Length: 401
Image 1 (cartoon, helix red, strand yellow):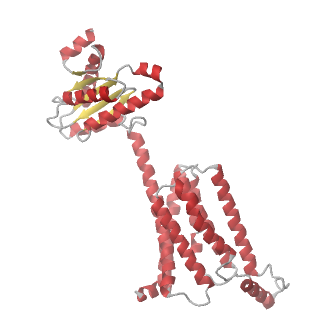
Image 2 (spheres, rainbow, N blue to C red; image 1 turned 90 degrees about the vertical axis):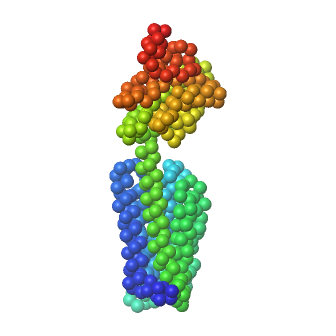
Image 3 (tube, rainbow, N blue to C red; image 1 turned 90 degrees about the horizontal axis):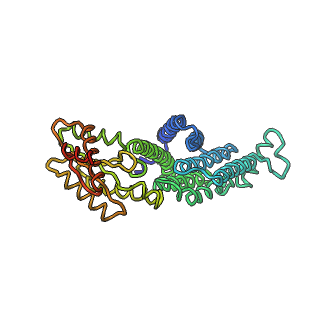
């Protein structure tokens, strides 16, 4: 184990850790730019790009110079930006969020500038800060040591730890992937704590602690990549689902229902169609309001989906018209339709008229839907709240009525 830690701390190991983290950061920049081009108004991708562009600051070893203040400020700014980017991936940034982001950026920049001035000796009280040559360098070094320029409790480091400690309370409640984001925030806090201790300690830290600092930094960027990748997949899935399902009922829309049912038929399965229409739906809208009508429609759709689950598909054909396909050999579509009708009557405030077209040899899906629609019309015109199986004679009688 010691040999592994020593390799990690060797120039080759440090380069490998830095290359891994920077590669992940580069992938996140590419993904963010591509996603930003697809949705230019989404601020999260711009924040991610900005935060990842600052990521090289994580991998530059401190040398005790005033430059370290700028690097610490860049790390702090990157952490702030990436947290607000993740927040924007899941929620719209409110005015208060934007003010908070602006305040944190301003504060980070101000504290970094203050630390840079302390390390550079700008605030030395002995008047040597403005002298040239070696005298100026000595004054800067003395001011840095006296002001905590290389100490553990430098102002910029203290702010970094405070922000990384408090950020979870502000960000986590409003985002998804809470476990991953909390792990990334904890890893960042630990890695920065080790980096600050390493920079401020007069003696070398244990080998395992130095190696842990490098590995934690790499793990931090990997977790951020997984968060972005997972969120991208979630959005792609959401777009796909919205393209195939009805937003109100959750059933398939007409186009996808016909496509899925045609797939059943293409596999040689016997396909029967149920065509349903909610009775007196317009009257329900007028007397009870749209909300009650929508709730009734959603409940009827849920019952239909439950009744054909596992051996068919259910869809919204339009308005209050629902359809279902049954693709199970030996199934009795009329019995399934009757069970559905009874449940609707018993469990909701509405009733349904149902038409059934049993599976037929060489019958296309579109023709089966048309026949089931005709049978449903017979149910409507002969008393409602009933199931009618399509037969040419029954349909003709229904039309006469």
